[in-house]
Image (tube, rainbow, N blue to C red):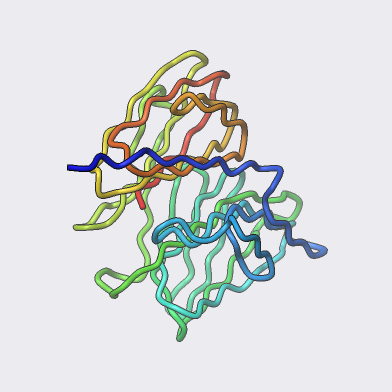
Length: 227
């Protein structure tokens, strides 16, 4: 039996693609829209990981050419989401998953009069419409030093986990060998699999079944996604 060699790649925040208008900023970990780099293709079914900011009272429309699961995770402030069926609000400490395709669109709005909002827009490729179009989940990362699963995991769906850690706290994450993992540092700094990751850096990992990490700063926040 041939053993697979572990594979790892770091995605530095300083090398992300940038797009901006007068009222919107987007930083792309992977190729997205007009940003294209040879080494920034999709990672498994993880198509996009965008760090986005909307200025007060601004909006952006989302359209997709294929069926995707869009995950919206506010980091500062709240979002107002308009779809053909409904209007939803998602606050910090909540995550909205939305299944959409070529026949639908979403509009993300900053409802504040004076505050900029910052959020992650994550996209996963989906092969079938196996669940309802929108699901909102809440989580509490004041329960420190452990990873919390924040999506309502369905059969064969990849887990999304988040955790806030004190400095020098360590953790281990186990998963099936048929999955790959993408790690993203939201706040602070971590050492993950003996690799230094600072704020908004990412790390992809294949052919390993556990991840070891250590927070290098207080209130450091780590996002882990199975892909």
